Length: 472
Image (tube, rainbow, N blue to C red; front, side):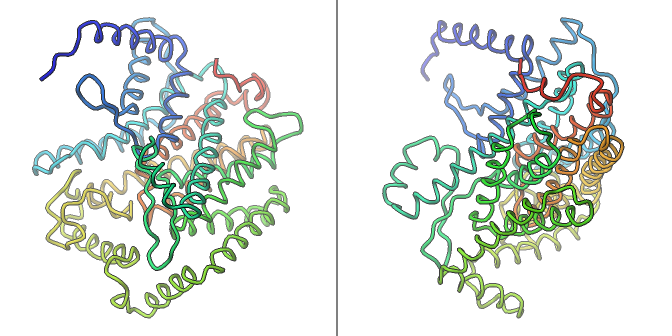
């Protein structure tokens, strides 16, 4: 085993200490920006070789931001933010995670920690409120979310075009760049000659679509606290396109739900411009037309749908994703029924006896059934309480502030609609278990908390929204 040079360790420690002090103590806003960039643009995570071992930046960042919080308050004696709006549901959910880990350890489940540790990103709610309690709203972080989603949407669309126009050259580049390390997969779409690029954080496109549409409708001329109108329209357009060309049924269903919610909002409130609704419907129709124009793809979708509706899924290939998810769901229901209260704990439990699709796996497609499998109906209730408390608080804040601060509609109702779409997509893919979603959800909670905590900002009595764009 080779020895690590002491000078290398010393230099790394000094550089790390300076970086930690600047980004997490002196300028904690910068640390939060870096954290959100890594969570969203980093895909499913990237492991780095460091000092003879491997480490992923995201957990270094979340621990560093939390450590900066402790240093500022315990060492530098800065004042705390006070009571937190979502403290109780977060404590309940934290207990759910703790029970899931303890139960897994008692049952001897392999790898009982990797699943619940991703929920550490919920801590960013407390950190954001703490940093911005005297500064207003964290528009800088919202801008990071918008821009990051737009960048990843553009990369996804570009990679899909490259993969289909020149597959050989594309894969040669793909395997020799950081893209491969980010685990962006390019699976073969069965029954066709098309490749599609799957981005693990694609569900955030629905969130940005909802917020940007409402934001554009509420934004007054000259007031641009996040992006210009043109920039917001570009983010919305890229979000729609990446959802249409994702080639995944869950994302298509999410987009249909988003379009329905936005159209319904226009009909009921007439606050969303008609041209925005028509543009969204037109883009979706064009996407469907493009998909329908590809004969193998159209035939594959029609055959699959008609076969399943007829109850003859056995005629489809055993490896077909629809068949796999259908069988997995049936087996999950049986396994949950055997331990319905607290579940099997995190990690890999002994539920493989209920079906081959469950054997040796720790994560499954239907996120809610997966969470019930690991934490039982008690844990699932804790998750729903957390999500429901945010929806209730966001809707209440919107009703109180919508006349004084029209942008609240974009933030609060947009987040509610976006959360509904992500929840729907999570019925077939575990989007809710990704760091990108959890970080964005924590940001949404922080916006609601800050609006309730300092309503004078929302009513115009404090700093103007345009003054909150800086990350300084």
